[in-house]
Length: 412
Ligand code: SAJ
Image (cartoon, rainbow, N blue to C red; front, side, top):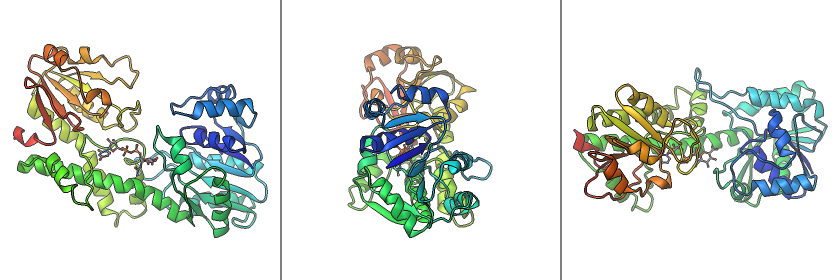
């Protein structure tokens, strides 16, 4: 089977690697010349375990080539970004549309086209399908179209691409069947055949489920700060119930999935999607909550901000709430930022950040922050105080005052 994959990013490249390893001929298409040139030398541009070796081997065996333009193939997979449109809360389909248009000259009767990018419900039927119909194809008869959302965790992409169950949403049942034959090349999880719109909404709801649950935990943290209860103890106790899983409160929700996908649903049914929107608003309010509590701890001075990634142990800072918090604090405090996972000339070492600082503000759960050099901190800070918004520090020496979402009520 020959596969043409549009977009060689975090999803497209690992997917290409797995098809190539499973005896398919793969062409990986990207608009970035440098990326294409490097990929053809076996040099990859993403940080993800396992991919580099597979791509190198596939390039040597000539089963994988990168290209700026598509080629004829049996199946076309679209893995391009779908950014969030701030004005109307929906998703920007322009990259998906242009990728679809660019494959039209290469399409032949009997081909399968799969959209993997996360898209708002109804996008396949209302926006993508007409592109191919206008080009003369009859979907389900001479061209097969499906939406098969990816659902993998960065850092474990190869393992999850192979083993996770996969939603295969066909525009018609025949489309779903054809798309499942494509994924059958390497997926070992279940292939669940359904309609395109069901696949779209399932993907958006997976991330919405987490966003709503995080909002509930954040609301609990605020309530506890107000009424004088330890929120972290409440979560620990409640989660001993076999059917309860309260999530963790934090400084807000970052990343390009949880902070965005719920809006795709809201945009489709704004009058009805009330909990979904309220959850987004609650999570968006957390940076302000953090800033307000910092103000209660110290009114001026230097703050050492630890961690700006949205996700612990990664250098990924997309949509990170840390930036809003820093902007909110900059007016009244001197800010020094330390993040061992992000290469930024403005960031400083832990030693430099904490030197003469009045407060350490933890905004990300990198492992490095779970057990720090407290001797250095005590030496560096005249009156050491830590505000841990990720609840990762379990114990500190007696000289250090620790605030987390368990004891914010002490500040009232
Ligand atoms: N967060 C909390 N409290 C929690 C859990 C997370 O505040 O209890 C925050 C994190 O700090 C972070 C944000 O939420 O800022 C998102 O973190 P995450 O690691 O839960 O999610 P993502 O965006 O990295 O990955 C999600 C995953 N989706 C689900 O778990 C349902 C992943 O499987 C998807 O592939 C990915 O979105 C995606 O591509 O949609």
